[in-house]
Image (tube, rainbow over all chains, first blue to last red; front, side):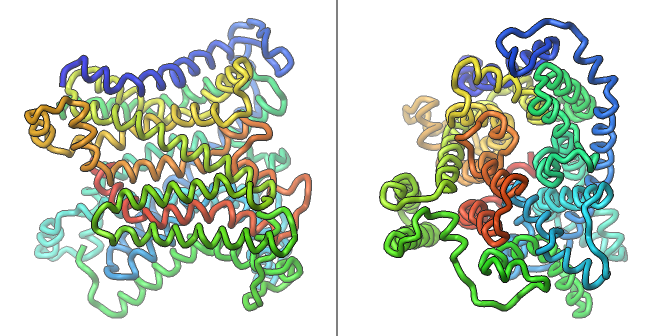
Length: 287
Length: 335
């Protein structure tokens, strides 16, 4: 395929991406340098880097950043481990039960995230199943406070993201060459050793893909935190994105919100760079 | 790996799987149960598991009037839609022209959804549902058209430009929505497109491009070049051969990618929340509807709304479920 045909085929897509992604990102940086509220939306006032400095000296921003880091630190390994166990177990099952299990396990991914969060929260409200469980089995009244709310957020985030890890790892397990396992079994490796030394190395790239993708996705965590906390500040459970939303849409400082978004973009790019280099090498090799 | 033979170990495998199955489904199953109760039953201090189901909550969510006749028409039309979906599901087993049949059924279902409010007075919830359908279908159709062209070229072209585009797309796939949405909001306000489905569709297509071109590219790359060459020797130009030869081969991959795009578009919350005010989709509407800070809705009604918002998507995903896992195995995992 020559260059001209290539450009013709990709032209529309490139146009959309340049005009709706690269241009807005530039605009975001530019608007981040302006003082701008909803009332002065048509006459932004240039203030230079003041917004960026204001964000960096805002303790609430750092609190949101730390909490987002905790979410990453806990939910990312948790969902990969649960997803991997699910995939390994399901790999043992053949026949008509398999699609039933798959459908059930993919359900958290299909349910609209916002609705899923509400449903999850309802479990802990007076008419819910978990509330009843706490009252009858643990003999305690369940109350929403900072600790329980943060636990619920962690649990729901893990619940929500597990299907992705499960699906990718399960699909990866299907590509495992049987000879490798056979050879390991011949050498007397136990099932645990086979998993540790044959299966996990085979899925190495997939694990890396899931880890990097989910870390980057966690930076963007918004829907469930937004709904579960009900935008109530008493829980101190704002993630980076919900805090950004609060500043832009409730405090109505659009310029400050843009500056914060740009800073989050920079944080994500730091995580992304090794991944980009890895992909670049792979693509160059492939040619 | 080889299946475990030991019966005790197998028992524990099934036990574990059942646990994870329940872990994934219990919140939703519980909501379905709640939605079928009367409000008094739903608020019971001890959860009820056996009761006489009622569809009253669903009627209240979807239909405006309480008149018996219109209720019957509404239910009748819903039954028609369900039957059509079942036929669509069975069309897989009709060997020939099944694509046309599926397409026709999808068209009829969309037409019924579109014209239903003309016959039956539907509640506000239906307007949001309609918006969701418009946004999802619009996003999937436009996004797939652009991304198929681009993904095909990216899979074939070996120049440096392809690598640059792919890497840029990858970087943009990872960036937070907030980085783009506030400028979109600003642009929407300036152009007057704020609070319209058009703006939501345009932005959604753009945000889904990176993912779509990556996934489709991996499908197109696996199609042997010789197939296309043969068509071109027969006198087709590259575009005709792409349309007539390549697309039918890559169709399962396009369906899988389209399904993921559909999920993304139907789920999207933050973007729609900021870019619309009254003309929102179900995702945002249900948060306002159920978030329950302003008006405390009855628990059974809330549950019915939650199930209603999810069920259409669940039906579509169930129909195409095979493609989802297969597509992922073929595309994303290998690439």
